[in-house]
Length: 423
Image (cartoon, rainbow, N blue to C red; front, side, top):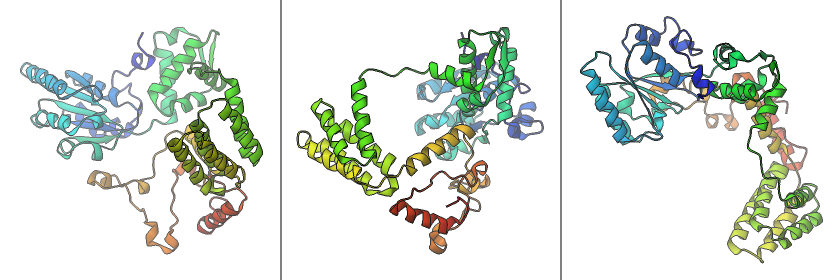
């Protein structure tokens, strides 16, 4: 059976959801389609926002032959075969074929070069899709022959419409008694990707034995988790002892640390496993309270890798006792987890224009880099700019702990940012 995302794929522009700025009534692309004056195009945008669907709709609306290639598994030979077919079709039809290339940024220079002649002579109309900046990934000769359209992240109301349409119109879901109670979890899981959204909806709907099937945050999370691959639950002793080792260091007890390390070494544990865990701990539990801890732990890993056992035990012991005796802070660990939680909650927020790099004319025309100020050109190498998306403005992720080193960092940040982040 086809996935839900394929079964409910829009078939015309009126069914297409999102991207009103490029495909809405009166837009340049819509006018070009309605007048059958379609140029070669490149759709640039994040995954799951409708690039492939839009290419299909355009070809169907214009009644043009449609050829599709994926840059992942297609080569120059495949490109030439499609162009030959298109050339033969052109002899019998006035409708110029559409060649859709998914992930065109993965094509090499030679593969892109093989498209040039066909695009220039009008043998095909190229429609490329990319998640990467075409200014960097598409050769200038091909880029100059294409119109670039930037597709945006789908907004919450778009996602809601997609879910409701799927429940109402799909031949299988429409036969189920589905009650859409809550959607936050579905939207978070999707990350703004319509394909992931519909996959999650289908998993939840097919997994439930209840009537009605209630789509709620808790049931969605539980269902998706149950469908993830299970991890290996064997070796409890192994995990218990490494846990005791880590907690001993975190608790600043070098005696407990070396005891549990000895238990692992005598039990035949891989010494590099122990060293790796200390590298992680050096950032997770010590962090900026003592940045040297990460240096010690990393060098320990390298040294054990070079000299092996039994001498490696001495290096492991030195690192473990140093880490245990170090000042502790989990501020860096909490900062990244808080940031990840914000990403999951808010999705892929766009990078503010003034923070985007603008080495090409296309990007400058899109106002990339506008109003950015170079910190080193200002007093104390600092200028107050906004470095977070608008929705997260003023959000505090890194909150230094109360220790000598991080108190210095807090004082530095407060001097620079005043009350903005609450330092």
